[in-house]
Length: 394
Ligand code: HH2
Image 1 (cartoon, rainbow, N blue to C red):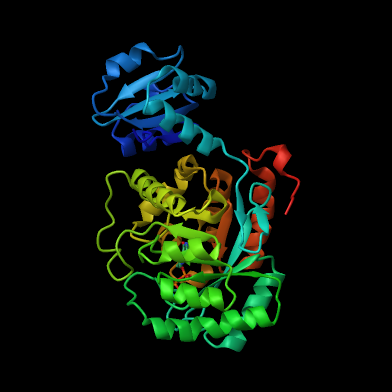
Image 2: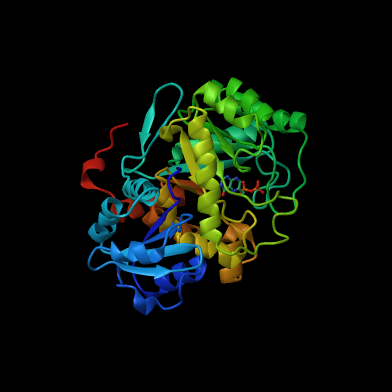
């Protein structure tokens, strides 16, 4: 019996609780929850009676019953006790989810053996779009010398990895032929390696063919916005020993903004990313080579993007490093009225800081210096970092 897919979130007050209840469809009244509390959503396994589970509820833990899910809420300790008192498959699903949610030893390992310890410091991924049409910097770095100069600048400003992309994934963008994508990205990756900028390189592509040639040219990681949409992507990264970012996107850039309605947005993202991560693990990828990303702006409305950021903590349930890409995106323009993406830096920093305080440990950004400064402060204030991990080891 597969473990039940459970979702964990620490609710701090009625606003959190209301959004969690609304999304899950389990009741509407936050006053029924013992706030602040740890809340856990559990799919009701076939043949289980909520009444029987209710009888085995530890003292101080509240249970609400929906049509397909149970919500239990209480102290951290009370919720952990359920793992020992409730039967399988809930017990192991709960154990896995609580362990994932509380996991602090997250790291990222590259094929040469270098390991980044992520709990100690959030890493900044500088965006290097070598495209004519990206939404905020299209055309600016489209020649190899300009791209190289920008990569060097970002390295100096504190980026530890640059994400080289040769295809815009802005809403409505058409796919670029493989040869053209390679023609744009490969010379830039080769130049960064040749110049020894001391920065890692990620290839932002949905295609395994492009990723393979980028890895040959010296890229260290694959950033796949289609979340393993190309069936050859997983065998490729598994064989090469490199890490991969698995991002959530519903639809394709061409059509992803046509319908941005979800029944339970964060629940759907969690389920999709959890499934892809399991697929990667089955292909021998270890957890230190899998990064997950909820895909801000990819098939989501402006308020949906804010909901993801508000509930980002619950994505920690998967126990994997979380990357976030909020830089200059349109939900910031929607909230502030600022139409020019280049003028959205302050909003980008606010969103990145909120994401890091909720558990993101890799931030993809255009404005590297300002982002690094904001995250140095955010890192010092992250409530979930344990002192044992504050000494950077790698
Ligand atoms: N966003 C963009 C592209 N790649 N990758 C990840 N993992 N997460 C993101 O949020 C993400 C991403 C879109 O931003 P940008 O590269 O600036 O624009 P464009 O797609 O127009 O080139």
